Image (cartoon, rainbow, N blue to C red; front, side, top):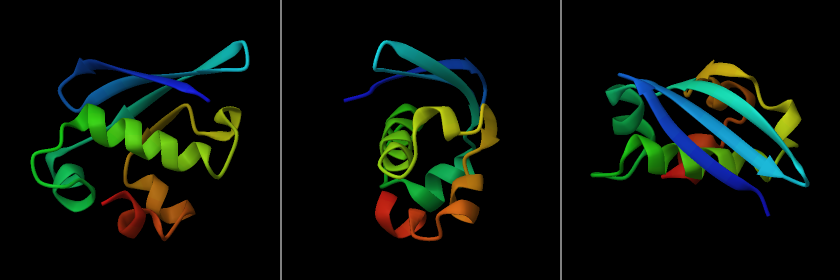
Length: 87
């Protein structure tokens, strides 16, 4: 099972590190208040939303296939079921 670490970088920007199988990847992800309102249950933190989002992604692709830098809403373009599933 992958270990997902989320570290705030500055307002709306987070560094996500995924460690699994003796290797790790890093991802710079933008999460705005609009993303929280659209994808997360009320009161959820950006960190919690990011962990859940990366768990969602890792169920569908290896960590090496996840973009290294992206806006959270990009997930929906690749996986239309994301908004329904993540909430």
